Image (tube, rainbow, N blue to C red; front, side):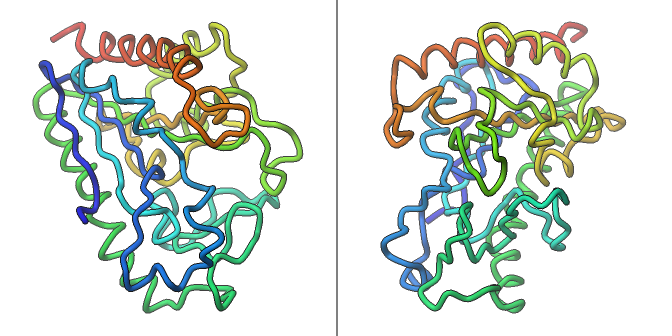
Length: 267
């Protein structure tokens, strides 16, 4: 199994890269039996996000999407175990030992994955994905002068171990305004607010991918969009709903087209 899918644009490419780090469901055979069978496939998966964004190539956007489950390694966590938040919420780790609700995911209910195994998975799964993102951004920046990474995520409407309240429809993360130029942030928020309940940097500011690759001083921008799953799935948040998906896809296309325009208007 390849570490990730790389989807090239079907039309002339533009300086936008989509990252989909949590839609993967694959488990290597030597690890699968270590997890509790009744919890597989993980509910924590960003289900169908790759399908939701399948229009991206027709806009000229390059897409990288992870194939392996976030339970093998979470590509959006700090590999040095620095927590993304310190407000008391449950935070799963780089190699998680529980799901979002705190349920142990391994048969032996281990509290931590051994350091040696964490290092192995980091080198095998984490580093190649991140290196590919940087390579793709460097390539696009060399052609266009600047580039934006859009990190795609989804979550259940209610996750009590993270927030006592239901999440808004959409949450834009910009690392408190530091991961992208204000023009990209403002243009995105304006569109997202057309028909949806939107929050900016609360309760999610963007994960490690946004914070690592968002370097506007180097003409390298990054934004994370978290969305409640019921925007494109049924009420049980288990099945893809084409009609609902089409509504949010219209908004996503408008957002991304605005960003493309901002990046390329002087080219």
